[in-house]
Length: 234
Image (cartoon, rainbow, N blue to C red; front, side):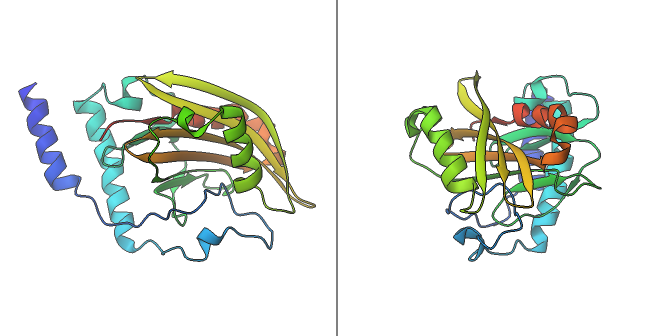
């Protein structure tokens, strides 16, 4: 116990100093599709500077360190699935698994993001915005919350959105809702999982996206990511 406490103190002061990366408060957007309609939040987004790369490199290394020192921490409390890596952000209060061969990339207004090395549309992204709500159920009925999220935020006017499935779960006193949905325009379609949670005065959203033509083949792999998302108190 003493060794763990000492190691946590060292990691907190040396590795885990938070860099100032701005987070926008506009509506959430799952992916960029070939359309003339783009959410306004992207127009005013601040480009994440090189320091973001440095912080994320430290976070990835710190995730491995945390797995050794603190095996009870969030996603790391479970056995890591084969061919996945764990991403743990103790400062921002969330964690998830991603495929081991994916690489990190920047996506405007998102806190973390990874994508397939070869199929770049296959990706996972996490962002959060401030909220005064304490739980996702404070937003209203999940059916209405998810419907509004998919049809009014994620999809643009020239896209047809279809909600295929919705699941709720509760872990460690935190509630989550994951929705599977499809967005189709005239010449293009994507399928996605979105998982929402509220903690720490933040409304977290994870988006996992893939080309609709490959969804059937990769759906189960991507579902592991969506189901692994967890928030923790900070």
